[in-house]
Image: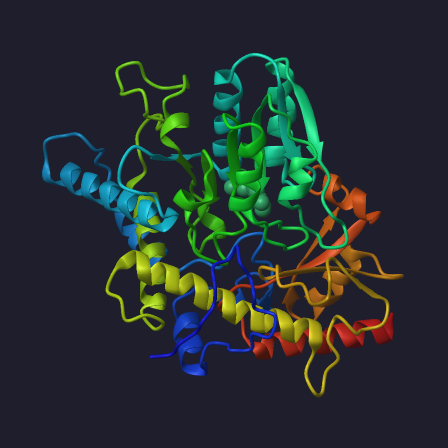
Length: 438
Ligand SMILES: Cc1ncc(COP(=O)(O)O)c(C=O)c1O
């Protein structure tokens, strides 16, 4: 049994972590994913675009296609319909364990995308809160919460207040929120991990600070970029809504899912009149989507079983989260610090890293600018070397985050737990070549 001692994602002390998965375990992990080193359109490639969408588990596709081929809907009195209901129930249970939801009154529902789930929660909270007051968001957020808060503050006649983030660390803290939140703040949003700076926030601490000033505030969290890098623990955060997106968590482009606290679950919201007042699902479930969620959780349970002796599913998921985090931390450190033979991103000339070089808060993503070369060119050059990364620019998705940095664009390398040290070295080699040639 391998022992990895790593704390939860909100208390990172991984600075010197160097323990990656063993080569055997890494090979077994990679074997379980589709297109791990090969793109059907461009050929052999290294996948470092995980923040855009992670690799998909083979089991998700296999089981999902099997279930998707069945036409029967739930709630009919025949065996096929009963079987579909079982798949849906198992998927719901798996998601509850994944979120870390207690059995009881909280609710999980699936929507079109993560964005749609976040808009629905922010709309319902804004409509339900007492009149007046403010809605608070941080400029580090994705438009899924940033834009939703602006729109629903306007539509419910509330002030919209913006929390600035710290450009040196690429993070926002409880103190930053405390400077903005008012006693009559009705709704506040938090991004758990930023897809641009790659940094994780201490959600529980921020939520505690908000509640100290505005105890009744509805707090809604975008967990979409944290989910692929560590375990979720919604009951511990002290918030009212938490949203994930399955294509960013080893599944397909199918649904976003929201966990909703008991008190937010029963506010007036769009629902069929004949259903209980805490039901948020609208229309038929796609059993193949829930089968996919179940396969993700089964995979994490398998991964976690190498790191804990517990037979409890939740314990195994927590162990998987810690192990993924530690492996990714080792990869990130290698990318920034380099190896004996290769200089790392932190010491390459003309490279400006987003966030501190030795930040313990990075979750798999490193963003940087190179003086004299546009990020879209770097993406193209790395693409020619068979390495897929992404550029974030001053647009509808990242403009609010890049403007405080004074940067028009950045290159983003985003890793996941199935990436290897060899892939990092190939990337460093390619970056060295690009810098010499351009
Ligand atoms: C932090 C964050 N929030 C929200 C979204 C949007 O997710 P979806 O495509 O499921 O709407 C993304 C997608 O990149 C994201 O990174």
